[in-house]
Length: 214
Image (tube, rainbow, N blue to C red; front, side, top):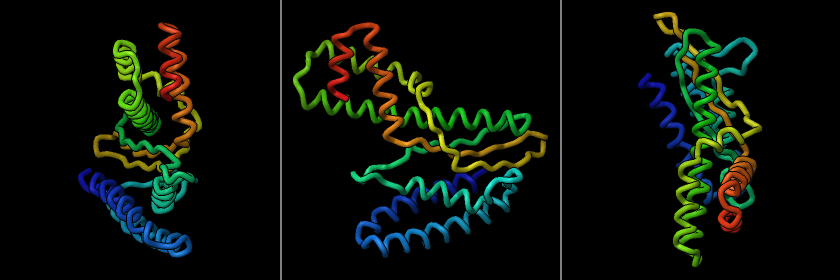
């Protein structure tokens, strides 16, 4: 388990380091170097995971290929230099493969929803700081956004599976690790619409204020 966590943490560090260094390269060199670096790390990490007993179901891409797909997705950016995808990763245990995967998928989506909600919260805070809104109204909006994060998950669609691997534990249970991606622009749009529509049930005026912020 410790090795798996270490591998995933190292992957995040590699991605961050690669992104910074990539800014100093032209597009052609960047693409070549990114691919070489990611592929090398994926081969190394895949071997480590396989030694720990992780494998894939028949018909699925190899662990190495899935790691590549996952990391390429995390590196992809839109025209503004922002993350193109929001990715959620989770590992869960269950009495069988299906049960464990269901839990892992659900929690990975919850992680994505939390990331989306945090971005919405940052947008609200930024607008509060830069505009002269009524203090009482803004307090209500901020509290509403914070207390209704759980609703975002139900509005997310278009989930893209990036990684799915499992291993059987000695006591007969299964461990399943998944990574799921959702297009950032679609996720943010869905979350914005949800917050505005839900707040409108309480106050049309405040919903309009929130819509302006977002």
